[in-house]
Length: 140
Image 1 (cartoon, rainbow, N blue to C red):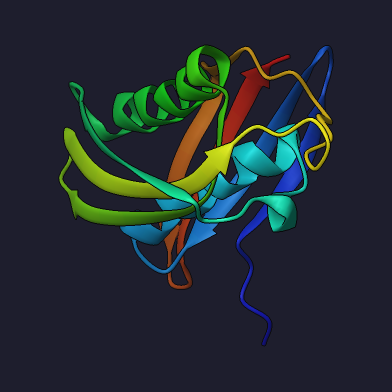
Image 2 (cartoon, rainbow, N blue to C red):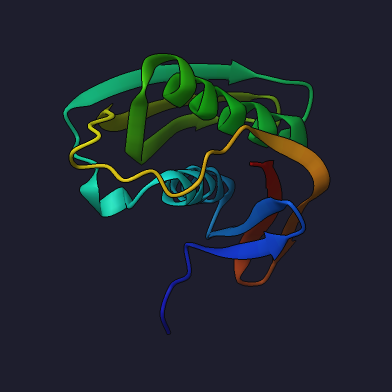
């Protein structure tokens, strides 16, 4: 069986993802990868820099949105693209991760979608026998 990481879903005027993970750490990592796959071809992102992030929020749903919005902020403010996410610590309201990527290079990175924010609209995190699944809609 092929292990799914994420899929893109269409939504009127926005775009969404469904991320998958064996556990919550993998789910958060795959959601971040899905986010950057909306922005550019993740295969073109080299691991030239690393960034340690710590996010705190009131619950797991909010933590997922805050995590994705922090990554969007880093792309918007510092023009950093990421392609690998090591989630070192994850509780229901705190995340510690090391993200690997590089600065945006217009010669190598083609922007596919301008993502403004992860939203709470239609947000779902589910667990079944196969692991976890999260649906996130982004403002574009």
